Length: 448
Ligand code: ATP
Image 1: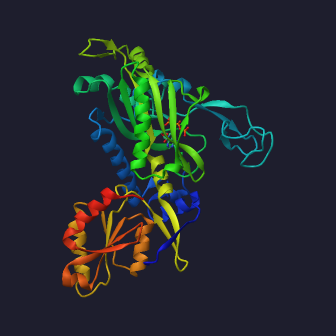
Image 2: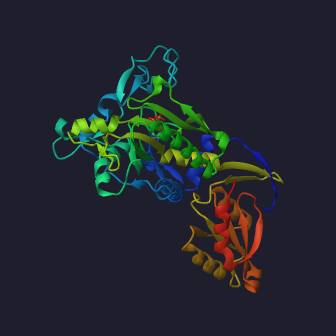
Image 3: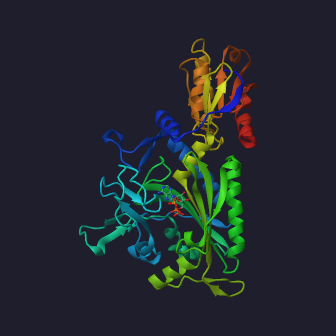
């Protein structure tokens, strides 16, 4: 190690990401020992840390850093009427075709119906498109009849709308204010591919912002701006992000205006997050279907109205893929070696700091273990004493650990250690006592 890289980036592919994720315990195929299950993935020891860090970062951004947004956590299974009111029972459908030859199923808007079947190559083999409802349903209680049907929520948003009145009555929020939620959602997707991009079970990070009708356009602009700045703060490459405005024919049944934030994934530009102007569609539908008054009373002006809503809706698991894709780099080092490195923002990295003794003997190992223990309270740490130091650095680069600390014979003499920075591979000699402060400073100043 120690060679300066030539900044040559080899092409990133989905296969490389999937393979790295499997190899390093980030994401595994669901039920792999049974041959796997399409559209579902499991998060391993490092993957769950990454996912939790992304969730925490979003939560902090949306709740702690905004004095007018509160959080909540609704149940996955809700009253079936919720989904009638929301329009999901009638309209949450995708057009689907089957190949009559091989029975493969496709979204008819994702393929050319005049071309051959992408699976078996047969021409003129598709059925007529049919509308297919994407909600998973099950039955509650011992009798499986139509009265006992419940749905696994296809989005977290409705849990917020049905609690709007509860939150207004039990917390001190005043319009404009938001309610944020992170949680699982399920959709019976016809085609699941591209790893964790589109899965049948996923997690969403949604925020519904309630405003006075008429103020919605201004707040829509505010949230567009705020959400793109959030990705910039996370160090996501700016040229990989863009807005896509929905045309009239793309707008969902509830939407007045909608923009997607798109990211250039290895398979191309795709939606990462939606910012939607939902008007009072949801609250008015729930008021109608529940028979409850969901209007808001402005105690200053004494006006009563049904608020309009601006929604920011990001996929958590899709963000994991985006963060992985954005962080991934293969660098050709002097001498021809390839270094695979994940340039995670330090706040997202599953491991923040690794402590590596240069040798195991003469008390060096014990000093390193002591340092690692001391840092545990403040950072996600990892201790590794096995293998050549260069190989240990590479292992940490590959999972995006921003700082490695090496302990050597000099440490015994002067209580200093070497801290090595992942992106630049530069090293600094610093006292053990200033380690935590140095890491905090580097976290704060981090720029890719
Ligand atoms: P798409 O067009 O990709 O199907 P959508 O427009 O239906 O997405 P929304 O209903 O707006 O998506 O959901 C908001 C966010 O939830 C999306 O931007 C995406 O990040 C995430 N999301 C939606 N469906 C899935 C899925 N099947 N798997 C993973 N994430 C998803």
